[in-house]
Length: 426
Figure 1: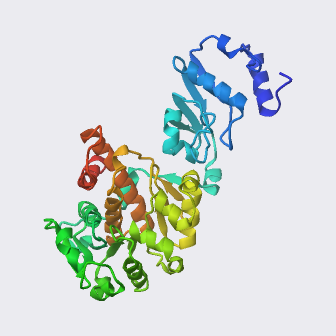
Figure 2: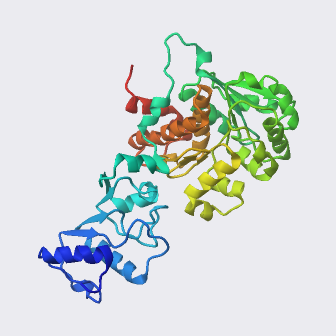
């Protein structure tokens, strides 16, 4: 007992007085230990950072071997998991269940931690309401509650009441992206959707989709600053998606500059528009506060001039810092998408499905968020709702395509099914 101190010594003494049989594993031949029915893992606390010492790695690997036949219960967090990132360091206890208290650490809800946590139980620890009110969480988990933000649809409504979305994108070889964004907008309830692209690409964009209107821009098949001349009625649109398939030409960069300086409607900057913002750094400070950026880790790395590895290992910090820097809402996509906005607590999406890892998935998301913005939602809440809605299509697609093999447009087509799953018909 004398080798312990503080709280550990206090509780070891209590266990000793209660007659609990104990043996220290320090210097013990682990391989000679009998196989227990239950292993309670409390090696490390929630504040663990850095990399495990070799002796802890040895213990954790031993617990995981016993866990093939024993039930493993982790207290607070599986030992070895970083409570902020959810990543093992470099290994971690693989629990059958984890019980944590008051609120889950962010790392416990990260997709990387799922295979280590088992079934996660969040239990009360007796914190007073005053303490909880004065110390609100820095991050909330997105749930189906976001659908309460959806505007009610009146049977007397017309198409104009549900928003007119403009998709600006498409270039040679990249005409599918704006079409997928348009499908995302239509399937999430937009009343009207128009794709604006260079005149020479109109027929390729249309591709037999009667629901998608088109707006020819400029005289040829290339983006130029002059394309803005055909958008003199830009304010007639309720929201815009800029970037899907835009390409990375000089003309596209010139168009983006002219667009940002035109006082545009609420705009979702996605795909090649993010590439352009990474190169035209002076435009970052000119983005309206109604703007919304949706980078995946590679686009975020280019925007921040950092490595993808750095972005992925600091997702929370990067999303928070850059939403403040840019002064607008930012969605850092990927498994465990994060929504950040100035003055708002972060939102983490727990839905993580392999079915969303497909080219065109992000284009669909941009269309959803634009539709919600057009229907009156604040950009932050439009992003929160759109991210969860988009991610939850994975549930539908997992049932229909358990081994993948679906297409990006299937994500869009599954959107009404998600509402059928979560929302009561009224």
